[in-house]
View 1 (cartoon, rainbow, N blue to C red):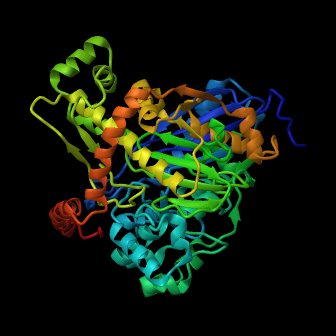
View 2: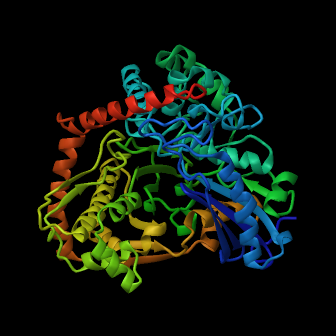
View 3: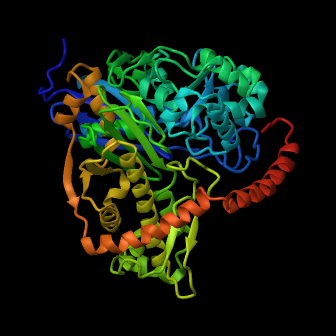
Length: 572
């Protein structure tokens, strides 16, 4: 019998798999009340220096993860959240998950990760590649060049460029650098779908990751002819390793297996929803499901998602997918590869001892200290402008070999001034994305923020001023996990669709921050300088940032190759 949504004794579990940890939240179906949550930090975090098995030294721009860290979230965070909620596990009717993307892994036909197969465990290419694995930029460049040469229809759906972060560039890198591992791959699968496989015992693929990360457009993947032109052995990549029936977002794809029930402490047989991406799944939690409501999921990076009524080709976006966020609309995605990571980089590098002592005395962390010191400075008072490319540019340049720039430094520049300039740089990057969407025919009627960075009042006010529009805030501090819970409720039959679930279970504070006209005028001047730098280093003939990256990579790769040669069981 389908549970009534107003039954107070019905709950769902949403699980958000992030970059460094996984979070489970227990949510009441009737009204979206979050009863409890629990976090499990990944033991291996981001693997970017040495491989856990065999100790191979990884080259620059690599970022891997350990699949058992994800299973451990099911074994620890879910039972802990249910216990903290104080509910009877028998009252949980569904479970849903979301994942950072594109986080992708090679597996056997039964779902076993190659990283856990003894023969391959010491080979770096057998391990899951995290979204921030940027070592496949060369392959991405070739994918894009060939697509334009051949006039492939799908390339315009991705703003004219496929990212080095997405499935094809990463898979092609495996083929070209470790063909033995590539030959052993029986499935190439998003972690968002692999974790669902662990829960329900059935291999599924969801429309969101297939569309945005897997180049699935108009009912098909790129042709075998195109893939063969990239590499003869790549011709059957989509047909053999990707192509499976796609499941709609919010649909029930299976039931919790006995093994997964033992891991989680939840009832065997409850609904398991289709997988999803952490950014896109957060939209219903913030009630950002109508056309024009742009949701910025702001954390270590930022992903921007917005629904539109029509299909438009927007240069530099990550993708547009029919039903990619919500059924009945075209879902547009853009993003910035680093935001919170940039701020964390500076607090880890640029805070002197006397500042740290002051923070300790006041009970502040470094972010709070620098925010307080920067808050009263007039716009432009630091004389700085920065480019937010410390981890490359996802949108709208789609180039992960770009790097950060700070202009205007003097001997009088203070740490808090650089911090503020970095905050502003991320707002400028977002403005470039909003401008591209609107110029491309996708109206933005509301700007909504979710994620950990929404708690920084200075940052939110800067965004309102730079964008010249109000900033609304999702109420939940667990946006993706709550969004997953809403999808779980829909999969369990408690609501007819995701829009209805969002209306009942989502929460948003409209126009929490208003733009100040005078500050907005001042930011227009700074943004003009940002655009000059952006175009000079990003699209102009001066490829200084690329040259510097090449010099760095050559030096570090030589060191890594020497180290790898000393370890005969490892291959990069």
